[in-house]
Image 1: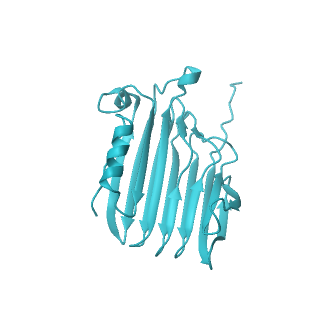
Image 2: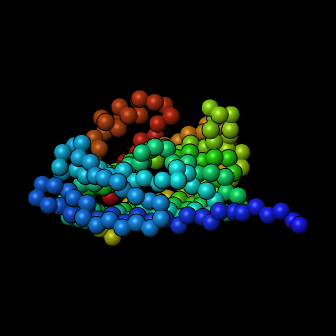
Length: 232
């Protein structure tokens, strides 16, 4: 008889969080999850006004076919910081595409900080990343991502695979940022890509204008650091 190999079913996980302002405290007041995405507890290292949550993915890594959805609503005057306990790991595709969808909404006077730790793409990973932010006219958003292609310390490069990204940020219903692209080993090796490097990072901020002196000091800190300000 022919031997067969059982392929585990992909995870379909979602997490929905809602925050409201209670006096001077930002509280997590709505929490729902399906599958392995959780928030175990809230933290207040900056004081009661800023609620920190750590999104935990218990399997520890994402395999081909997995789908993760994170949906966060920050109510009026809330301040929320969302992070992760460690690096995100996206394993080889095994013929299936993995997907992550993040939707963030901030009401009037609210602020959302999306600051996960680094994301590691293993060789042959095939991943779609979608990030959507909806802000009230006076809401604030800070978001970062650190992408690591392959594991060079372990002697593994990102020799095959595909990473697709889409990022949309709207404020008051008006589009402020729209970016999409596909990252492949060939593109990363190009001088128009990462020129052979394996790590890149992006930080986006929507809020008050940044002084020109601060922009200049950031540019001077590292010749590989690009800094720009988009007029709204």
